[in-house]
Image (tube, rainbow, N blue to C red; front, side):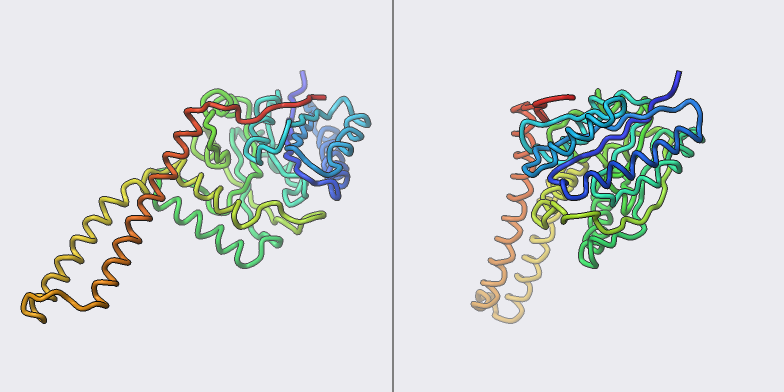
Length: 311
């Protein structure tokens, strides 16, 4: 019996480049299964509530290739993490490869990924060598994010790892069964469930068409969710801030006694101290609020996604 390669593709308003992506991916997969015996493939497109013509294009692709294409349509936009989770839940492949539909995740890397599976690895993390579409600021922000999350959490995140990754059926089963949080960071889960894993590097080129749907605000929210998923350090900031503030208070007392003979400090000193203390206070309230927000979302236990149609 052939082993099934499941390709999970998240789609959100990608009508301009969707056909090109499919043609490129299918050509690569057809060549792969013709050169290596014992493999077949399935492409699972997850339409994450697109508001353009993406659904119509997916319908045409399904009609052209019903044997290899599955289309899952959400009732609305639930986000990229939810789309990948749906692909994880519905794809029955022996090997799963997750990628975006904008060709920044090159289908040409799939043969290398299969080489890693054949060598006995269970998880393959794809690491960007260069992201031409992100710009200098985006690349610098990504590098800073990974340094920060590795510093404040016990999890080990691979720098420059992306949402382009692959896993075998056993690893996918763990994520499907045990990692059902509503606040999700799937690439982080993949890197921290264990198993025999390896990395491959790739160059992310410019998008095939259109522009990125991740604004700075959405990326910031994703970063905060990732940090709160993997670290409780922000909750412990109060302890460190308390010690630091107490140390500064002692220094200020010594300074006041030495220079003013016990009289209170000047107006500027008082303003600076008050501003600093309130900044620390609001920072801690914000951190606590973020964790309460996560608890609130988990307690409500609403679905990660809602499927409107499967074809």
